[in-house]
Length: 287
Image (cartoon, helix red, strand yellow):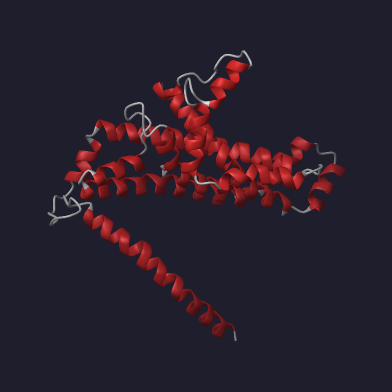
């Protein structure tokens, strides 16, 4: 009976496997092959070997995009997990209108990042944005300033808007992990004299490892492949200083460099894959 059940389960996985092969493995193989050509998206492709990869590493703009993408990903993924965990700890408590507060925190995550970026641009627009006029009416200085002309300020605004929008999604995962922890463990720890800090670090945090793994992996993937929020807020400016690799790939592709852009996409795939595998390995060791 067990053997039949196992065979039936394997049979049910065939459609999912076929979809995976068709929509992931096959395009990946095609992309690897295309990255070794000079195809412009229209004519015949010619094999150029590793020339596209050599051109990528010799392009100062591409190297700057790697730096911007990594800085954004580190800052964004770290803050998303910290803010999301803080929200989850607060929302795990009982207080009036708790359900409404959870909805308000999560609500920005269901809005398109492109639309959210335009909303924040109109709020923060230098000299003309709503926030600028509101602060002027209150007699307060504009603490944001002309952020679009400064790389550090532009990057900080991008990270802040991204964290504000998606912290609610991270919170949901952590909240589910917190609510799966047995109350008996916490009650037993309190009887033994453990305080709130000890309960968090010795009971809650170790049992949140599965939730941490999910959030870290998804936040790394989302932050390293960021596109919408940058296009709507800065369009990669000032200059190309806040341009991410995803935007660089898009612009190279539409610049008749499809083969080269595919090679850059392969590099982005590796840049995402490495930290994801490392984080999975570290969290598995914690289990």
